[in-house]
Image (cartoon, rainbow, N blue to C red; front, top):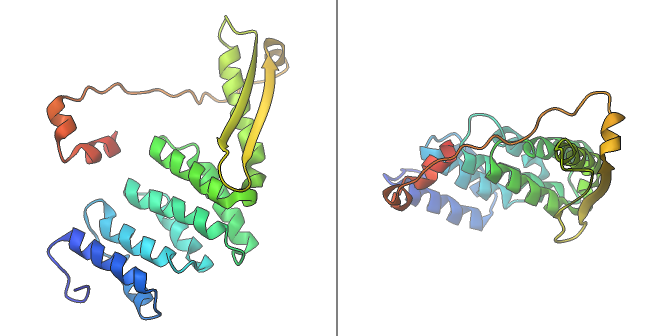
Length: 219
């Protein structure tokens, strides 16, 4: 089926997932070839990438780095980000690759997509103790949250705790306490990272539409 192809992308994706379950040496070249196939929302690339990740080969870090950013669909990017977490926790993952993984996942935490941010957080949780170098990043995030609160006229003092990665091995989190007096010690305020949400009205017909997921991804 994968040699001749099929008119249905779903059928081809299912075939790729089945082939990945074999995990034989003859299956890997086929999966790699299907990474080059274009399809709606990168369904074929996503299925092929997930299949390759089942081999648990640290050499696939480069693939995940490629597909975790850029013009790819949200589904493919989330699969790549999740893959970085799975590959980074392997004992055979080189230190240089782990550093690249941490840099990419930390960058994903600033994504405008809630789904991508959540996927990156889950990937960091999968890394466990390997994610501890990101403590400084979490401290910076906590500082930004505290400063945003303290610029409000009603605020005098605030306590910020970040414990998003509190499941599984190697839980990671930070706690800080800041007051209005601390703002006076800061030479320049932190960059504005406040969210600027869009309010979108969805009719009942839109909610029931098969295109709802695609519309949400485009927001």
